[in-house]
Image (cartoon, rainbow, N blue to C red; front, side):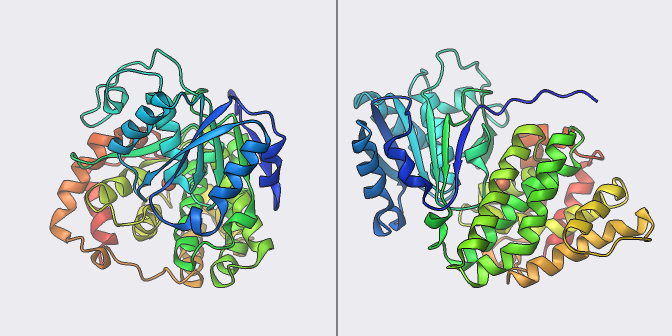
Length: 393
Ligand SMILES: [Fe+2]
């Protein structure tokens, strides 16, 4: 048993923790605050609160408010230019995964020349080394989905090339400080709560069956899956339930730790291909659509792991042979999706056609091929086509 463990992020977790921003030691004197192009950060008063708390802490700020739900390279470059012209010395992502991921990528481009895609591995990315360092990153998360507050990863799409690719530098793109305050999540709409919760679920489940899982990532993953199985349906049906929201937020942060200690696997490559061509498809919805066919594929490869996931989701597994227990997890997954009202999602709901499956397959290998290396069993292109076909309804 051998592993390295290094998560250099200070996490402040719990209801009311946002107020700590006024006293916490911050990594600079002027923040670029990165938020979405939507209205929720302003309408809910979160932006004003953050600007005010920073001010009390002696920190000035400038706001960049263009980020899309599937964030794009163009806005990374615009945000980085604004950070430079305004003399910002750190970047603060406020919002969901798209805003925090964009903050990370802006922090890279604020200190490095050229185009963001010069540094990306995969697709048409040039894979150049980042040599000038990265501005410090602070994350304040208002959703429970990507786990980005607890990992170094950022996912950005190239708006002209149908490429949606993950990137990260260890340790530079870990946030130095993350605030996870479930009170900020009470206003997330029902459907998004479900989509984001399942994104967290799959970070944990993928990391649990990845071939680089360690005892540390296993502990985080199983706890995350257990918390989501017992709390996500309540968070979806009763968004004002702070206890359920807190447990889902914790599951999400734990799944970020899974991404930092194990890895996502090719389910994420398959999903990124879908949302690279259909940016209006929420990432979590894409994962849900693929998940039953995808996870069925590995049920007989790592049956003990499936049995363990089924157990923490409340299935009785005692006395059931491992090879039969694999499918219990798939059953539990389907039941959880039904309870959250997302069991009947279809690719066709988002205008995706079955003829496009070969295109998605090539894109998944071309842009996010590295994750296939960590699957518990090697997937061929034919296998991937079959998973997409089985997911297509
Ligand atoms: Fe994800």
